[in-house]
Length: 289
Image 1 (cartoon, one colour):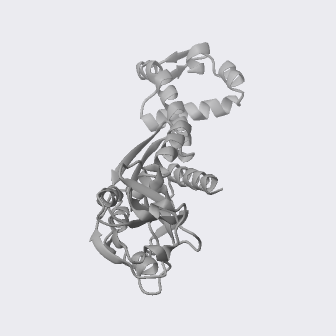
Image 2: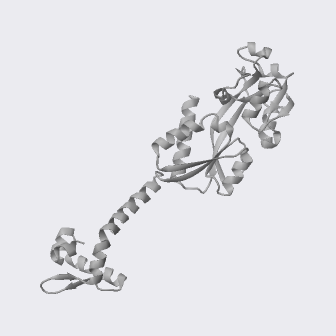
Image 3: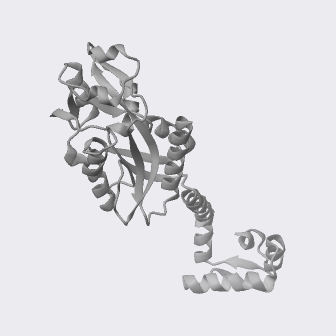
């Protein structure tokens, strides 16, 4: 473009701040790669061929696109553009996830987030292995060598009681006080290791509850409790869900707790994903403090 403007190799080299032989060599290489002459040089003047003029007509747009492409690649490398597919279940949606998404979208507005609700941890792990999601939120333990898990929450369990339950008169309860009550819990099949570690013989609860009903989701558990069918133990974030007919009471330590981990594929090098997980850990840590 500079040669076409000044019509002189020497002046073009000076403007470009490179040697004249280097300008000559680059033009020769460009002509060789295109398979046609672009410039005709005489002792007095430099002229463009028809092909040279055609290339010059498109050159500004090509250079602008090349610059934009380089900028886009750099932003992608920094995780500022792209798409993330996020798997979640109600425990994440009812606690930290909405605020994390709000903060991430404010910081990285050009990263599109696609959210997919999956009812169980096993569904999320399978979706990760099939590359249907990039990150999921799962209760440990997670025994998948191809997946990487980072603990983001360690929530104490709280007692969830019908609104008219006598134990609701107490500000805090000992776990053993719930022993005689019929329980509403999630199915053991959803998280067998976690279930046994918490509610099984020798589990952190301290007794084996009598399970009257099973319910797969938090809202379903709350609904059954609200009509007096039993009590439950749920992560403390359930307190963010207002539900008529239900009262929530903290437990006196030592209190059983449930962890939640952000899980991604070990080989995934996406900077956008790294940014999302980092922000999630940052927010969860601030909430814990």
